[in-house]
Image (cartoon, rainbow, N blue to C red; front, side):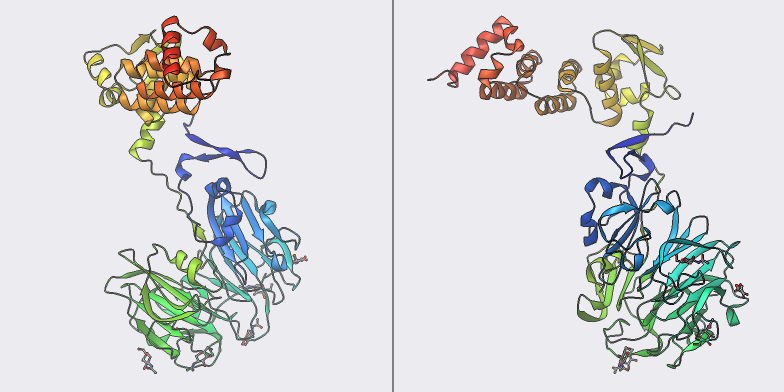
Amino acid sequence: MEEEFFLLCALYGKSGKPVQATLSSLKMLDVGKWPIFSLCSEAELQLVRQACVFGSASNELLYTTVNDEIFVLGTNCCGCLGLGDVQSTIEPRRLDSLTGKKIACLSYGSGPHIVLATTEGEVFTWGHNAYSQLGNGTTNAGLVPYHISTNLSNKQVIEVACGSYHSLVLTSDGEVFAWGYNNSGQVGSGSTANQPIPRRVTGCLQNKVVVNIACGQMCSMAVVNTGEVFVWGYNGNGQLGLGSSGNQPTPCRVAALQGIRVQRVACGYAHTLVLTDEGQVYAWGANSYGQLGTGNKSNQSYPTPVVVEKDRIIEIAACHSAHTSAAKTQGGHVYMWGQCRGQSVTLPHLTHFSSTDDVFACFATPAVTWRLLSVEPDDHLTVAESLKREFDNPNTADLKFLVDGKYIYVHKVLLKIRCEHFRSSLEDNEDDIVEMSEFSYPVYRAFLEYLYTDSISLSPEEAVGLLDLATFYRENRLKKLCQQTIKQGICEENAIALLSAAVKYEAQDLEEFCFRFCINHLTVVTQTSGFAEMDHDLLKNFISKASRVGAFKN
Ligand SMILES: *[C@@H]1O[C@H](CO)[C@@H](O)[C@H](O)[C@H]1NC(C)=O
Ligand SMILES: *[C@@H]1O[C@H](CO)[C@@H](O)[C@H](O)[C@H]1NC(C)=O
Ligand SMILES: *[C@@H]1O[C@H](CO)[C@@H](O)[C@H](O)[C@H]1NC(C)=O
Ligand SMILES: *[C@@H]1O[C@H](CO)[C@@H](O)[C@H](O)[C@H]1NC(C)=O
Ligand SMILES: *[C@@H]1O[C@H](CO)[C@@H](O)[C@H](O)[C@H]1NC(C)=O
């Protein structure tokens, strides 16, 4: 049987089923800077693995969970939540039609419309469709996810990009398909009619292998594996980098980048950023907000170097609906420029953020995600996590304790490392079974588990037993944990029992705590069976101490 360590998050999903998270997916997605996430509970946030904030007022949200469920909430403009209606929702609703699909990438337009590709390479679209940007041959609003098959049926899509009203996808064999609004040639087909179904972008891309795509508001870009950049569509602000302002109905190479190998391209509303294989950034296009980072607001129709700092840039960020630019250096510094919350920042400004996503959350207008936010599934277990898994594992253990007729499987070396008592008692021990009768099974198990995990989970009554053990083995930290558990579990019924235990195990701090509790609840406590059965000496002590603190004054 495959050993899987499950952490039961003590919560229930929308489906009403208990929700479990595997240890490998415990890393949480940090969405704290996105205001719309304040509509999700802490428990819901724990499960979020990917997220996209979109909409003209950052008022739409889609996220996936560790269970491969997709949830949406927001104003549902044009049915962009894909739920089959146009009802707005302030609570997350599950997008049932895509349950079980894993999202590889996702992009959105200004309508908004959504284009997503699954990890299997299938493409789904929904939302605004006035320009056929859903690629299903019609212009009817798409209220539910539509699986595009025409022309893409035996293709594996690995990247998607949306302009305001057009859509672009990249397949695993380096082909680009486009559809939707084509008023400026952004579909790359050579005409201005809207393109109702996916059409391969050919022309001078015909024999090229594309490795990255991006869309500005009304233009399209592709980076090919040789590091060349091809551009088409609207060029009124020089965003195609061709030195002109005429629109291009078919792909054109950015000739000014001759000799420069580009790795990534990112498009803002009307400006373009590229990242070279040497970690340099070039920008061109509209510059009314300083989004080119050149230190002035003159538009540039040719690639212009952006001087960020001496360190290499490893990531560039822009979004077709914003005039904001961001970049991250190899040293982890994040810069922003362009339109930043109403200010025009004309030179790259060093932020305190550690991610370019945060620049968009806090400074872009609208504050939308420039890419799908995601946590890398992290299969690496820390030393602590690995040890936790090994507790009571018969497959790797070399020692078992027999307590109350039940086995607990452990590792000698770990016990010796973690506990003074075992260091000596296991020194010359050749046996692989040790019988234990001084303590009960739950108590002894909790003790051994503590050696693997640093923590305990016991009822206050059982913690009393563990306190006994901790005293016996001189495990002071464990003693403290037990006392904490006992304090947190004290009530009128068990107060006297806990007080007796504290006295017995010489836990002075706990004794004082239980005593105070008894005095504060004296009337009820003195009527409990615990009080009636109290040990004679303890009772005498209790009464005299109570009297000293004035409990019987009248
Ligand atoms: C395209 O999507 C619309 C809206 O969801 C739907 O009414 C229509 O039937 C779809 N067309 C095709 C060819 O599937
Ligand atoms: C897209 O627009 C361009 C020029 O604006 C035009 O030449 C081309 O035919 C249009 N595409 C389609 C599919 O109609
Ligand atoms: C896509 O579909 C249309 C219509 O069926 C067809 O004309 C076109 O050649 C197809 N293929 C590509 C690669 O665009
Ligand atoms: C630059 O482009 C912007 C955006 O379209 C335009 O409004 C502005 O007039 C242009 N500026 C110059 C100096 O050409
Ligand atoms: C703006 O900056 C660019 C890039 O440094 C430079 O080429 C251009 O001359 C500047 N324009 C003005 C008006 O200063």
